[in-house]
Length: 439
Figure 1 (cartoon, rainbow, N blue to C red):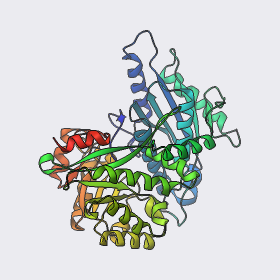
Figure 2 (figure 1 turned 30 degrees about the vertical axis):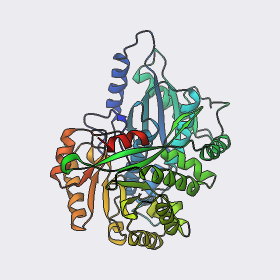
Figure 3 (figure 1 turned 135 degrees about the vertical axis):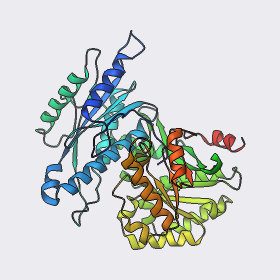
């Protein structure tokens, strides 16, 4: 995970998920409307109410610990989704009650794009969730109610109207998304069309690669960058990496897209100073491909870059498959000199078994554990425990999403070696990063 979007959760959040609570959501929406500078237009608000099916069944079948863990995972997926897809907007994520969540964005957005974003979020939330209370993974059934605020819409009428829409939606077999009017958008771009668009975009080299600068804590020295993929769709606008790979998965082109991104990033890194590292994210499909390690090393060698300058970033989602096979592939890559980083650590269940079984060189602590370390002693204690564990296992630690000087001072004092985030730099185009390396 590279960096944070404009998430305005503030104050005392929901104690389980760390998102805003319903009172904060009402207050923030009202503040947005009250302070909107253009008196001739309404404040542009778009909202999604997420209603999770089966969460009560999870509590009954596996216990409240599993249910609570699933809600925490859902909250993290919503935040990561908003970071990717709403990075140029101001947004708020809240837990309204039980298994009901709210995502609100202050941005001009077409009805088609908001509908498409809802479809993409529903797909993300329906993915399997690790279950500490049982052998099989958990699957939830999200339903979403969408709304665009009118000039007379208040936070109370917005939430009441969407809650009524959620009650109606539960009675509609086979329907998972409606607008608060009860109608589904017609004439939007179909998945089949979007999948065809992506194939053309890859062939035409239209997938944009951005670079999130990474810095040593000691002296704020630039030491590398993480490559991030974005797609600016001509009709739907910006599509972030998570949804982009979701589309690729439906057409069995994940490895094709992943190799395309890696090749592009390696080509850009050839122009960097030799002391800078390139971090590349890899997918479960990459690791499931026979010969992945060999093919990646060939790509690195073709770019004329030492494998010792490359870091592969993996997430827990990558590790849900055959752990022994994943470990063997990573061992092979590490033998070639490639470093292995466990990304977004703390965003999920923090399975410490991975730290024991896999050849991991670096822990990247998720921004959700960095966000409040300067305000919440419990968050600081958790952060401190993770850094101490990593140091005991001879792993380096990178803090993600550092946005304030207070956060930076604390991650420095706790022994983090490096950080990335909006405080120092946002993701940037290849030419801009190259210019940064010369400063």
